[in-house]
Length: 271
Image (tube, rainbow, N blue to C red):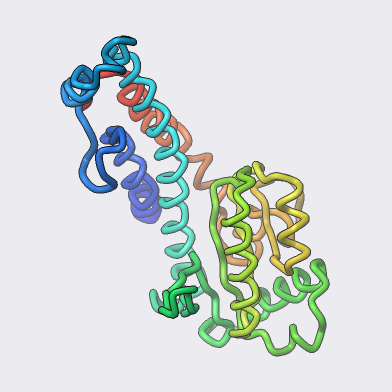
């Protein structure tokens, strides 16, 4: 295995391996490692109502563990791929760690200020290779034209910022509103906002709403031969790394890790 593949694999797999250690909390506080099967049964047996209905059954524990653990699987895959994305930007475009991170401050209703982060950044003036810089700028121009960004605004953009998701099927209006606010902040800081969806799973209504809010969006489709619409064409033809080939080369490893995590999550006993 190439050194690069090994390093990239570790970046993705480390968060996924956390999933197997998931334990449900059953409302016993946000912090902590969750309850073991024995602790769950003690909790439920000491509750008369739950005890009367037999809800201390190990299968109840297994169901909670599987449901929460599956959410964790999706979340950790996204987290690993988000880290991988930033690493690839650094390696392929010759950027520093500080170049590929971006945050901004926003006031809250309480009058305080909070710091919000997006998952990646490419400042054009930090790409040392002129050919790569021109290629990235040309992609920005095509993407901006696709979503109807005014030419005068585009000319002021100094790069792009990215939000990376494994998929986007949720209708959570709070998340959508936050992302739309992120787009406005990106433009105010002279960056083109782009959502990078690694799967082909995105709700069509969300796709339309985000493009209307001037988000560029690339989706995990193959064979499009269009880096303005395809995540994998964008990574290969614009960033300069064939991410789809990396995932395919290492598919057996990913599948084995997910299968091991799911096997643990679908058994009542906590590890």
